[in-house]
Image (cartoon, rainbow, N blue to C red; front, side, top):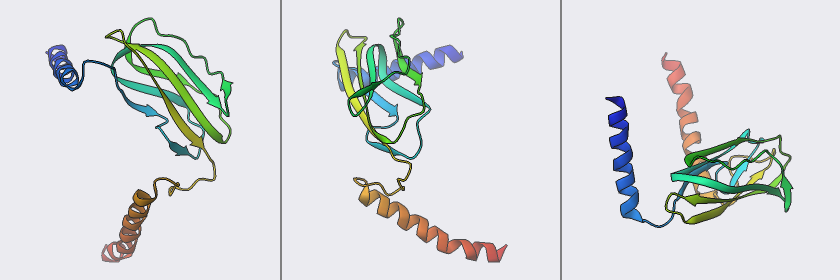
Length: 151
């Protein structure tokens, strides 16, 4: 019964995908996220696609210098790609990826991220969100002593 349910869910998801666009396989999310500012070296790179793909290439560069991490092409199409990464030093990195989707189309993209051990949560370029985010934290922090006194 469980496999039938997951098959139905997969078919439903595929139906949603195919109405959106029959063309290219979308990258749903990645770790590290696009334009992320990380304070510590990521342990893995992970790409999650909307449809199964065969990876053609996945290159990590720091200032245009390639960093070897053991990328291998997958023979079976999959929607989830994951590789362990070596310890990375501070800097601005770029993942360039290319894959072939189930529809035979080549898809590619780039994921830039920065590794900055001294970065704070309020990173440049995310200013409005960061201000709001901190405002909420500040607000909750002022409520905290009141809750503790009551207990």
